[in-house]
Length: 135
Image (cartoon, rainbow, N blue to C red; front, side, top):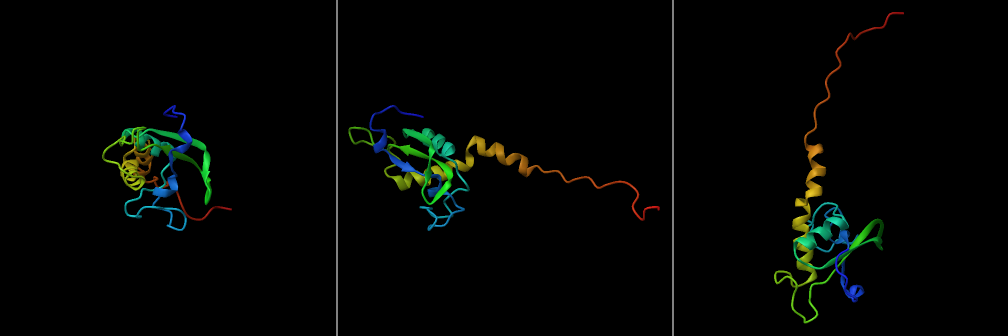
């Protein structure tokens, strides 16, 4: 977890469902499917928030109410105590969701997961005699 401020509970929340391209709007997606990413996790979203210099905290034990099987959410804070933005390029929650959705597919853990699937080798054909068995 990142950040030790006492007003942690007042930070905004970002569930992975909000930027999941596999979900519909009725299931909880909040950005366009073309801009969303496929099956993000709370850890990937947290890493992206850290990359964008936005204070965040990952809550692994929490779940989205409409899809309670996917656990994890990220709390983030866009503004400092004096009211200025943490990152001038991100002014609101929607902009953060769009930026995170761009970064998640390039996440180092995700790239490593996809490499074995793309380098699949064809199984060698069996070599041996075919035909009828002797009785």
